[in-house]
Length: 122
Image (cartoon, rainbow, N blue to C red):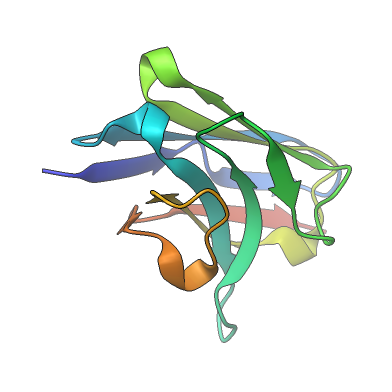
């Protein structure tokens, strides 16, 4: 019943921008904190950003601060990740996730999407 579907990934060059989307269904979207994670080949899953369900406040990993922006449109049940000034190090599969907690850890997300590939060439 619950489904998170990411889209918007692709192949870009260093310095380019992408906007990822995650469409949610089967949950009360406005009651969930939404997060973005990424996982590169051979590496552990990494937190990227989250946005609270309660007040819409945001939090970012140091590696993306000033470059990425997370936002949500509750009317569309969609969370976005605007990615600017992309670097080769941003190359990863990007996943969205949903949690009922206000400030969840990476272990406390209830639902996960299948991911969308982002590749940044030099």
